[in-house]
Image (cartoon, rainbow, N blue to C red; front, side, top):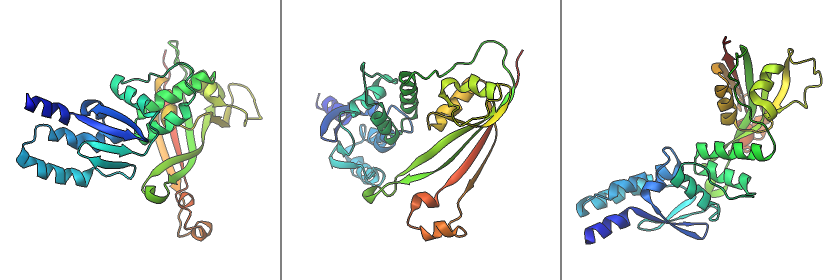
Length: 276
């Protein structure tokens, strides 16, 4: 009986997230492969069957791997996470259910999106972006079952990395200014629907014309790539360029500005063959 209680205790983790207390099973906490929580707490799964002789060595190895500036170990299987405690319940529900479950009239989508990115939950991030666009009245568009037209669509963006401050200097967050869309107007509208912003295209020469002035109303590359894949497009080619701080005088004068030093420009060419 005591061994069963010990194993049950070892399967639980107590979290203090921004002052809000949670008790979570290790199975739930590590359910999303590649997430921050899975990477941080997966070594604890190895401790459940350890003998007393193995525990000291396990603790020594865990101390070298369980490190993150926003997570502090308080005691054995008790941790503090410096994030929004109220929003964490939605993260926890996602870990439990494997899908996004939010209450009606939920109005903190953007805040929860930041939490999903912090905890490295791309599927939750995509679900939140899709929900936000749907609430904004944006038609995400779906591939038609009818015959499709072949063609190319070029996706490009200029971006940098938003570095953390203070104790979070190791944190690097991708920062995109705008995702540009180039290609035949009709094809771009078919794929991206109302996600496409046409306000920068003054020519408006018709749907059979080509344009390089459109851009997306969101800044998620993953959502753009998924949308193209859903419409039968495959990546054909890609290229990238970046700032050279040694040759760029303006960048050298602002050497302390990390964002400027990491400015880059990327292009991705997608192609879809025709189908009868």
